[in-house]
Amino acid sequence: MEYLGFIFGIFGFFAYLQYSSLKKRVSALEEELAGIHGTASFTEKRTLLDTIGSYVGKAVVLDLKEDCEDIDIVMYGNTKHGTNTIVDADEDWILVRIESAKGNKEKLIRVGSVQRISVIQD
Image (tube, rainbow, N blue to C red):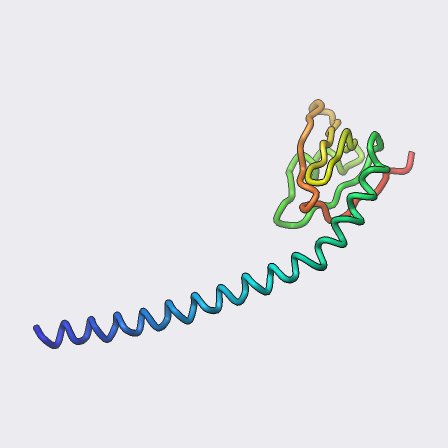
């Protein structure tokens, strides 16, 4: 019985060491991502905000980041059968009207999830 307690104690000690090293690595990654987000993304967001203001009321093609894709925008708005029209925009959100054969929808999209905007030539 004493050996069983000793074995569990050793396993517990190793689990604690793994947890503490993992916690340090996660903290380091979070600090690195915060540094990247504060510099590179801010300048891209500012450029995107300047561009969005000139596109209000125009039909556009929206390319969203891979992890933020919206099925309505990709399937209905960015095709020859439908359009995405920017209705309004501010620093954080874009209001988009999706016009398709299935009907019209309005969606709010975060500015940070937009990768690129292209104007549709009439």
